[in-house]
Image 1: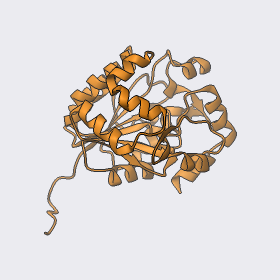
Image 2: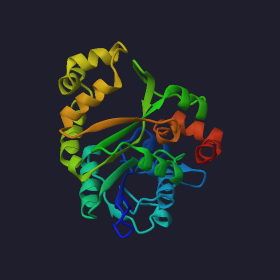
Image 3: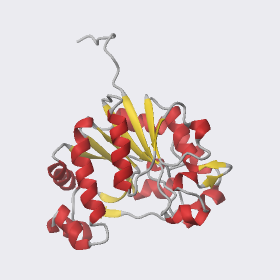
Length: 263
């Protein structure tokens, strides 16, 4: 079948979560939000905004304080941060929906090694479902960011760390917000989290016996939309800076990690 060259392209809107003042790293750097932590002369969030400007994303919604980020906003819609992360997410997604997107890319502002090419590759190769979450093998992370400590989950397929972005359709927004609100409410209570996911899943995760397909099925059931993990070797999608030791790693490594991610 011949493609319709006159068909409108799918509109992609990004939501960037800039963080709030209660963040440990923001307090360490004495700034009002994590995205404003200075890295090599510019705020950390500027690296993410620059990558989005270089990508196929059509519009960006930025949630959080803007000090120092103005040169990289490039016409972005700006929204003040909420009291909680889930509030900021809701505000950002609400603003994104007004842009009538086909899909929404939610990304945190603390992954300074990300590039436009990495974002485009994720968007182009992710499964065509309602929610996609990247899973990065431990081997890829250790190869690309040697010496930076990460947290890994062990499943039957191997050890993985999660990315700091998700790709969703507008249909997934209501259930995602409800789900994230439940997670946030129970974030410090293992029993509350187990009630969300089910003890069977929690026990399998703790013993490394869970399978990715099982986790996808449970997530899809909880959300009411099709959710998939996307295994990727691009560690820049999850190489965040959220602790003072991560900041020291960036200063020590300079731009090497970002250069590796772009090539």
